[in-house]
Amino acid sequence: KAGVTQTPRYLIKTRGQQVTLSCSPISGHRSVSWYQQTPGQGLQFLFEYFSETQRNKGNFPGRFSGRQFSNSRSEMNVSTLELGDSALYLCASSLARDTRTYYEQYFGPGTRLTVT
Amino acid sequence: QKEVEQNSGPLSVPEGAIASLNCTYSDRGSQSFFWYRQYSGKSPELIMSIYSNGDKEDGRFTAQLNKASQYVSLLIRDSQPSDSATYLCAVNIYTGGFKTIFGAGTRLFVKA
Image (cartoon, rainbow over all chains, first blue to last red; front, side, top):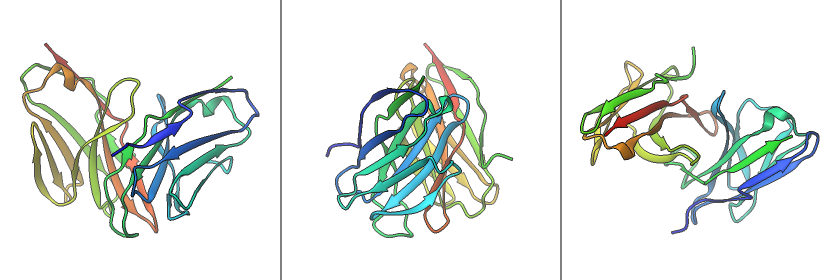
C-alpha cells in the first residue's frame, strides 16, 4: 500500500507571497492532520480534517488554512508568508473510521518551505 | 508546564545496552500515546502505540504507560547504532476532534 505523499517536497517563496501544499493520504484513510516542525518549536499541530470537515485546530494565525476533498486529499494554504513560516510541513493520515476512536498516524515525507 | 515533556538529551548508550526514554504529560484526558523515531532530515516514523496501562512489547521495543502518574516510557533493548535518532513522544486527546501533542524529542546516540 502506498504511503502518505506530499507535494512539492521543497519550496522557496518570498515574504508576502502565498503557498499551497498538497497531501495525499494512505488509501482508505479519512483523517488528515497537518503539522509544522521547526528546530525551535518542534512539531506543532496545525489542524485535522475528517470527511472534508475541520475537526480541530491548533494555535496558528488565520493565515494558515486548509481543506480536504471528497477523496480525502488535503491542501494547506499559507497566505502573506513571513520569514518565521520557514519550516518543514508534515501531513499525517489515519484510519479514524469513526469520530471517537483514534488510530495511529502515519507521516508523509514533508514539504520543506523556505521563505526569503 | 508543557503539555508533553521529554528530556532533550542527548542520551548516549553503548551498543547492546538498554536505552530508556521518558515522557510525562499534563492532560489527564489523554487517550492514546505514541512513540515516533525521526532520523535527521526525515519525517517521524511510528514505532509504538499504547492505549492502556502496563507494558507493550514489540521486538526490541517496550512501551510502558502509567496513567495515574501521567507517564509513558520507551525501552530499547540491545541498542544498535542504527537506533541513533530523535525519539518523539506523542499524546492524543479528543476535544471534538483529535489533537496530537508532541514532546520536543530526546536525541539518542548509540555508540559502537
